[in-house]
Length: 590
Image (cartoon, rainbow, N blue to C red; front, side):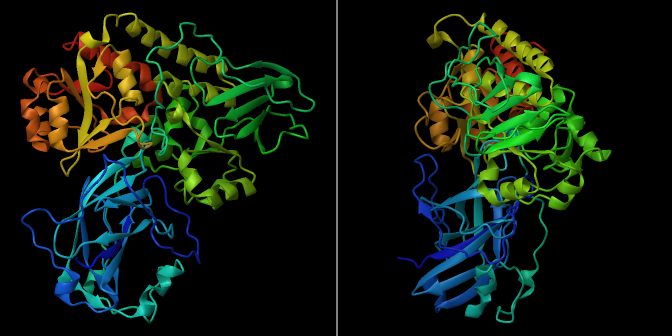
């Protein structure tokens, strides 16, 4: 059996999050867990390729380094090169450092590996490597989107660049320092680290940057209550706050991830499904003493917000309140939303660092009075604690945990409560409900008689990524009158909202779909059917291709949380009047 190498990769997609540096952090052994059945990748070389093994190279125990080259994905990610390799007892390991902090696991040879450390700004792994000089297939899961996405890459480690080092050479890595030490191996020109563009944060899930939730918990109904004013029924008693009299609760249509209770004199008490609680104190008032344990205080006006959860920006836009976001966790070119880009360009909104490495000095000096984070903040609890030490309340955006599409959209009411714009928020949401109700009224008939729809993307490695049956996109297709082609797919497996398929499996299941919709969030938009066939020639035999019923989503839709109703309307229009020119977020491939 070939000696194995453990390679340490660092993917750097500086888009949303960089791990907060922590000197002295010890790097521990990689934690391996078995991957789900739909994500297994092989680490063995493709048929017909030759691999140079540790035995063939006659490598003795010790430290080495060699150039590593990453390809695949969008082509914009990279790994630190040369990579550090350790050989011991005939086994080899290599540390892989991606050019991004957003990778939460990687898979090779059928085994899933978690990061070995969060030192610096990049994701670092130790994974088995079969050998050198071949295109090695690996999968890395990025959390830089509102939903996690596994991306296939190939990695080639060049044996001709191997350099023998000393054992002390990795001492700096064990302590978290990136400085060179006298004991490091002499480095050839390969150590020159070319600067690569970062892996793009595709907006499908910058939309809630919620990388573990993925959207839908199974069993959610495709229908929603008829009465817009219906209050969510699963409610506990309001919090007892000393000195304040409870008045009412915010009426919710179908959202279950938050509640807002109103008290006398304009006080509001917000509870989030993760257990966080906030007392919203009206301008000019003081918070009462003896608040419930762990209650954070938000003083109005909440008008100097640090926003690291991109999904919330569209709600602030809809409420004409982008001016309250003065600090962004996203750089200007990461926003598809014109209003956000303009605010950053004219200086009314400043870049204050990623969620995991915020610019504390700027945040404090700008008088930040609220931080809105995605659930990725759970990966760097020290950041949350530091913000709290500065007296800045931290609210975690969890709309992607809602089980119904309109439940996601209803989070606009939470921000309406923070901004004293409840009426505007209710009006915005009711407009969405009315649009959806119009579609639902026109979707009668047996489900089995409905047109079938496949929603997917194609990776550069030739895999098809599809939504699970209980995903919110799949629900929206059903609400629009279609039938999602992939039934009973992945509901009880991982928390991811997507499933990866070999093209042969995708072909078998989707070739007879009446309509296909290409998801542009990961690999970008495509212009026409020919562009789609370049990605996957097998699709030429698809019924939808033959009938010219292939469509593509626009890439900015996943940064538009208020777009839920319009997407449902678009899907319905596609199914009922495909020649119409009234689509908002999708277009027909010619």
